[in-house]
Length: 416
Image 1 (tube, rainbow, N blue to C red):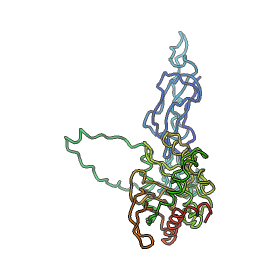
Image 2: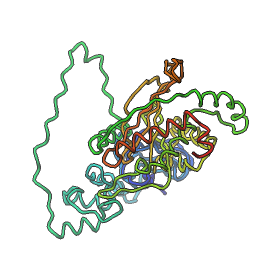
Image 3: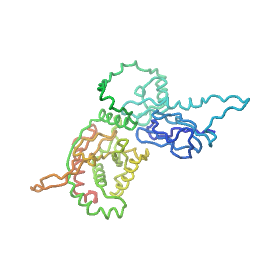
């Protein structure tokens, strides 16, 4: 008896994935729950475990193929006997062709039609109907959560006689200049991973949708650095984690978000959704690209709690073991280009969020304090924000509040 290997549920709003790497080949023995294949989604990489022990007899979805939810990936036969195809016994009817794989692969072919830029993708059943009727999601009014197009919406649109628009002439993309012959042989063409494609699309969508603006300030890091140097050994001994700067920045950000809730809000159509909680995303660079795991309810955590959770998420990001729950629900993002030596930059919003704080390199610079020029460890801060919802006064005030908390860290302890 064969056991099917199918695409599992991939998480909220994720309807398809790309087959990355098969860890086994046809004929290999597998054990139940052993990782079989790696799928790349828009957000994370997911390993699909073996649903049963046996022999991998068939691989349906090859590396690089796009598959939908519940699509057939392969099959496992019980025991080693399942690996070989037996000849029919004399007088026995020849086995029927294995046609079961064709309908099983249908979900992959009927992947949901893409939704309009910036909207929630249609439900899988609705996406299939859209494809069958040659419609796009922006032609149908969605009645689901956040305007998601449901199956009933498509059926209603078809009943009303909505039809596919006349095909518009495809935009002519600028042709890539042909490389000189001596250069062409030294070039390498590599297909973008699904994660890299998603990063590129989301960043461009953020630029096209939000009225993005950046304001800057600088912070004297001496007080935080002195406090960190004074207590870092005792802190690590008690909490089992090193005392870094991110704990201070996260607490400073959550204090400022409570005072200026627009920076922690998002736009949904003609509504503004104010979040009465602080789920802070931390941009982490990995070998496969940038990911943003989320520290949930960061405003309720101590500095030690933030450092512990950040350590767990950063390790999971580097190991490729982040779960979907670790990546969802962020209300504000912090990115630290200073670890790579960046002195100043303008971060791009992590849509649909309305604010992102950029940290940078700590550099000793001469500054005037009390009429005297002194050398201080200074850091530039950059707040990029969506000007549609956050006014300039709110953005500047937010950045000033973060600056005040870091230059006088006792304010964080006293909740001032």
